[in-house]
Image 1 (cartoon, helix red, strand yellow):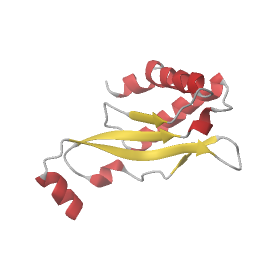
Image 2 (cartoon, one colour):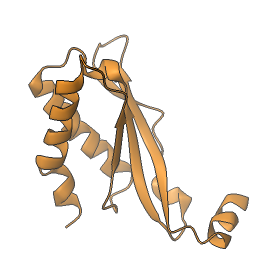
Image 3 (tube, helix red, strand yellow):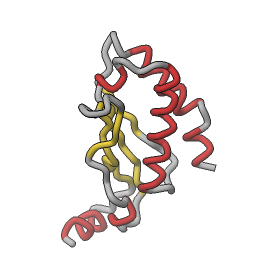
Image 4 (cartoon, one colour):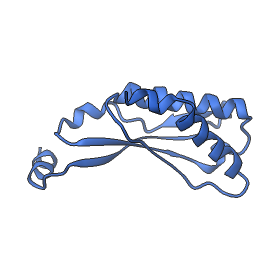
Length: 121
């Protein structure tokens, strides 16, 4: 593949890879992953893969604290189902004043709730 050859020639050491987005389902009104990458291992190059997950702002609008914690756990499980060997993860969200509290509670739940840190041991 041309892409793999180019990555090797450029000596790429790390790559941010979009694993999936999270948005509210129109049918269930619950957060769900969209555009999920099948396998990060299919990239099969010798560089560090940094998973990226984008969460829409509206995902956080009507969630309770318990649902925010469930979202954190579900995203962690989904990322690990795609690729388990990572020590860094990027969470992206265009949060607003109305979702700020839930978004930062999500980050606390995710990163301080031992989901992420237990993965890198």
